[in-house]
Image (tube, rainbow, N blue to C red; front, side, top):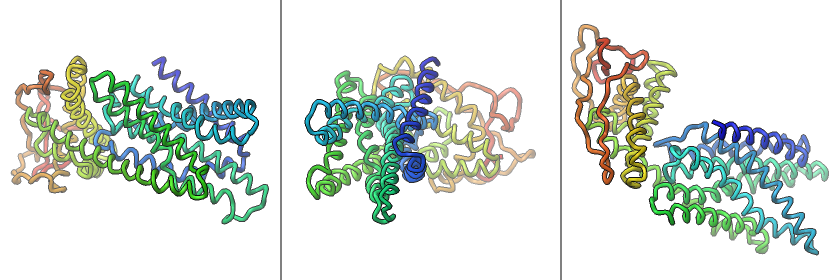
Length: 445
């Protein structure tokens, strides 16, 4: 708790400082113009970097903290350190312009990528549970770099607007339009692409048990991020067509490769969810139609819509929490199988915690997911069953069948325990928790 308070205090103070610093450099009018233009790519970038990890989404609080770190703390560190280093080099060198070039190519990439990587390291250190692989590394890196680019774009666009005001340039020939085209339209993914290399290195290292890999891969990712950033900053110094050469031969292929990798990561996570949850379905924790629905993002969205239609937003939140817990359970089990004894101590506790939450919410979420699986043609609907006198058909609790844990760690999966029903769920008797489905194929009441 003390660490969290310290981090939030640091974030708030740096936010106030960077706000005043940027406003002082751009002027009030330039600040608001830059702020409005810099906001345009933020939402699309955040949605793009959250997309690969939708199978097991990170909490929004964690992602927004990383975006705030990039926009406030990392940006403040970069501005102060870059200015200090450039002024020191200028005072030591005879050519001030050489100091600017050296600062842009050699100093800025190291300082900025290190400041952004600090957010990834903080999440990895203090919220290890939310850093389980490359998808989490991509999401955290993308949000951090998007926040950093947002503040940097305010600075560049605000300064360009101030120059245009002083010179009286028309809109089409203005520095503001040129800066907007290059930074917002042509290369909004530049900073996220650099930091994504660090996130991928740390994400892959999180799944390894070998110490050299766990240390070397994050450092390699950070070094590649710094190198790509330095190459991008030096493109304007490589001749008249240097920018276009670097953009077309390096940035675009790297962006395409990142998109391809994100698609592979997302598909891999969904396959993991389907494979690992079958074990719990065999033990009775899940219904047979829930597994294909939980392994399909469209089916999850449909289940939330069905729940919202019949039970309002509280029911939709229950379904969302249930799907998130199920995905986290599947990835946890797969991580134990991959990483071995390193996580064997924590696995039973974390597994039981997730299973108990799912068991509590299953009465409300299970029918919606089953119905979504049928509607998405992921599961054949069972034959219609006549309704009982009360209009409900109770389903027996899962059998108490022990299931062997993931190899090579022999950890038995806990059998379902009786617990209280989800708030609002109907019960057939006070002594047991029962799941109910609507006659004719399920639904949520």
